[in-house]
Image 1 (cartoon, one colour):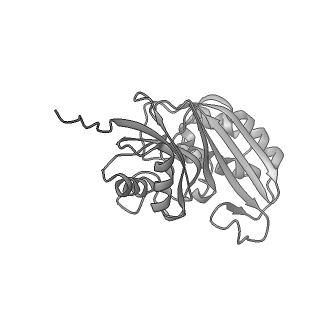
Image 2 (cartoon, rainbow, N blue to C red; image 1 turned 90 degrees about the horizontal axis):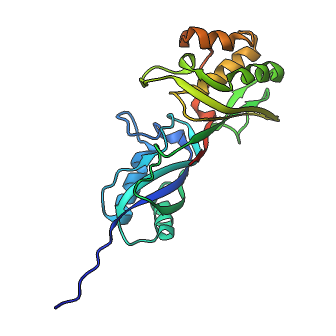
Image 3 (cartoon, one colour; image 1 turned 30 degrees about the vertical axis):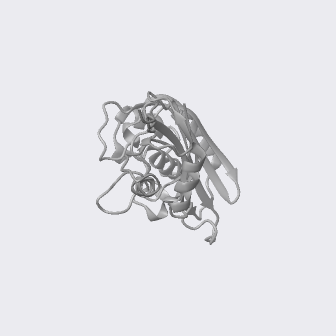
Length: 253
């Protein structure tokens, strides 16, 4: 009898990713452009010679970035986790990188196993434009009123109905979310917003930042936040901050 050939078993691989979203239409496949998901699946096809769907912890907007996005993919391959990460990063464009890869339990899910996510939003707050921060921040020339912003940001912490901060286009069963932390730090020339929650609605962070900036500019009073929770009307909230200042910072499991 011949020796039995041992074939690789299917395994679930977690990938920690980073990317600059300027050139992409967001994480998920879209008809109107190239997505991050598409580029990663193409790289996996090149490295493993198989078509595999990559599932992320959540979508990121067109033009938004990720310092640590988490995704998983099911593969039949004997390539080690370390070599897989290196091979994928080699064939991916320079603005997408696989930081690391690790085999996980079949029951682990990049989206449904996530407990919290943290987003960071960066504002360049100075009169002159910056070559170095171009495309990676929201440039606001007028000095921000940190006291008004912080007083309003404090009202957003906790469990609330964030309908007024949800952009149209992605229906959800419930708009109730729990913001665990919302910090605003002034690190000239940057003002950095950092938001941790158990989940986010479409463009929620960008709408929150835009509203806080409008409060800084005295378009609204700080207590307008409470009124938005009550009225649940997106039209009464502030502007939507540009995508280029938004970063998915980390996902906790």
